[in-house]
Image 1 (cartoon, rainbow, N blue to C red):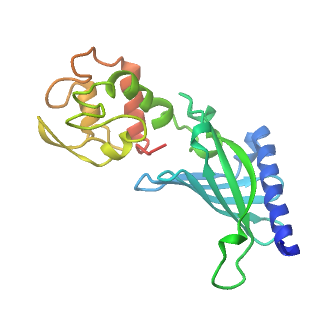
Image 2 (image 1 turned 90 degrees about the horizontal axis):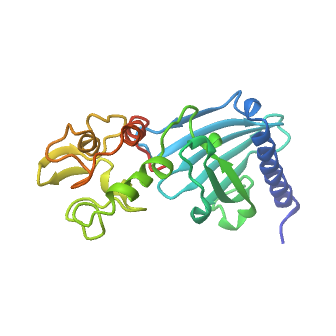
Length: 248
């Protein structure tokens, strides 16, 4: 049975999620004292946000395992800091070509401060499933993401090639769930030799995959034996790389 203290913590965490829902209705206010930063390795978004009426969220969106971890602080000192851990229900994600309109569903757990070591995992109690929009998770001005913009291009024009990018490919597989780890800072080493990484974060010109799409890379322009991608799709890949090429 939960102690009164634990019940108070859980109630506080539930109130935080309710406040977050309120923040969705008033994004201008919620963003007023907010900040988001992508880590240099493009692996995490560090998110600090004021959530009305009295919470400060300091959380990390871990892109490798699609979890959120962090702390919720009460700016009026009405409660001790709460700890938050959420796992994304990936089958319920709704990526959008407009990143801010994407929707992600997380199952969230909360815990109060650990009084002494060892901390117990039993302290974390399920709070609720919460839907977070891309406008809450992505930095303002994000224009292209892997799931919403780039992967659909792979699926339509590239990953269907069994010669180059299908599951039996000789080179790099670009199918769902594998394209990022197969390209991000992975050295190209195909028939054209070593041409640098397929994807170099923040550097489209230094990314061999992008150069193969825009026709400036060694060998034939991609897609192989197909028509070049339309300019807007090439631009979507360029913007994604320029914005960090995260597994987002």
